[in-house]
Image 1: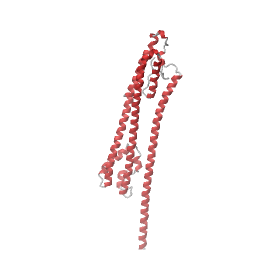
Image 2: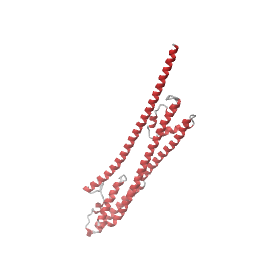
Image 3: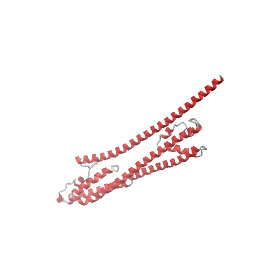
Image 4: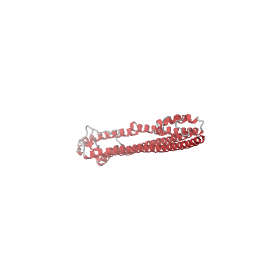
Length: 299
């Protein structure tokens, strides 16, 4: 028999529970006090690794927030460009200048992706805008160049953070720590398993070493689960559920914010389109009046 292996995907709070369980049992038995300091040090190290994981989580959240912020600024730019070009074309969306940038798309169609295709599309506008004979478009070209550079920085930052997180979990500090924890558990189990034979006067049961470790139900050599074993497993699973619920809430809130921002931008766009249509209608009606007056004079 041996101490159950802690899977790499186990939440660190669950790993901390396992370490603490063994530590307290070692401290409570005079025969095993010598093994306790190693687990006490491991407990402290676990908290350091948890802190590192928390910093990575904050880094991921910050990188994602930066992506949204840069995307929002590009969305605002698309609206600004649409208004500027419409001013130059006198509200004509079928004009070649307007179609050069928007073709058959509405500004909201371009703004819908979070960077990605939007970033690619607006990046392609930069040479044309900067070379435009229209001063208003040239200025927008320089502004867009700066916004695109910052958006690309945000994309690189997120990629770097995701890589750091992957390295941390798959081959870095987190994996090394769980490997170290499992190694100490196996070593300690071996020492404890020898005690019933080494100390016959203590009358220790053959299963003495097992009592210092909680056993998962899936372990083939596990002893029948006690109520404490079950409670321990429930606590580990609850910690994992809390982590997942927190991540789910963050994603749902971000999705909701993205949707609300999209609706708000579309409402503004519709309002502007309506204003342009009313203006065109008023100009058309005024022209009709002028033509009718001219016709009446010739009648």
